[in-house]
Image (cartoon, rainbow, N blue to C red; front, side, top):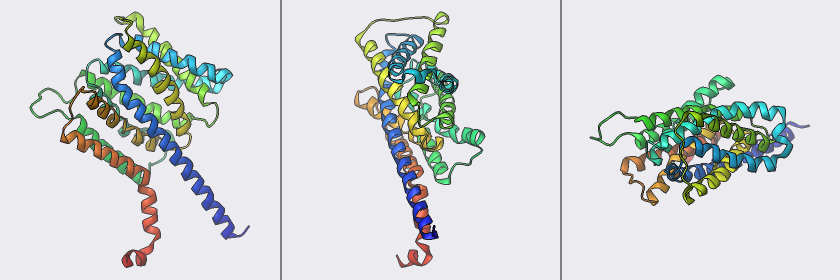
Length: 317
């Protein structure tokens, strides 16, 4: 095979990989929008049920739905082993997030949860022994700056920067970072539904195991029933399945930067429904997060294109 033919094939393969990566990133952006919108839905539901009862019902619904679709995949030894490990991180993340939502606003919970973008590069370095690309790190930095603007206290508000609800949300961010990182490691291009079903069963069972130790409360209101069904099927069963599929085709750091958009979507929905009003610093923070996503997505390609033009071409332009 000639070198030109080899280069051509290599270029085609590279373009195919980039195309698959962009498809995965687009899918992650879509489910991030779903997760952001459901912050307000969960906040409403927690007015009628305690956090662990809600989680047990929500993930039980999702687990049942996925088990029907996955069939025997649920009992695969690999899916059982990897799914159980991921379920522990997922449970911690959702438990701390849902508990925190009872003590803070939907947008602030979402903003602080988004700080997982800071922890994923560190965990990726430990798990994969791989330094993230410079564009991804710049994207992380921009997103982190945006998150600070979104979460900093109002002047004269008094008190510490992080309340009890916000500290719980921060713990959730660390747990989610672990889940994102390990999902890249264990995500398979086949048998996705089975592994996700195991995770959802794990979260449902762990939540149910906590019920004897907490104050239980359930008021069967239409908002609660709707939230259990919607959150069980969309942000749990559907979105986590898409996440697992997509992270088999992109890196954990790129995924984390995209997930930083979650608070932006949550804030937009919260403002539209009249839960809160966001000012200029919050708008600037959202803009920085968006910029961080663009840099992480396009920065490497843009830099490669710029260098490929050569000094002479750049001066001529």
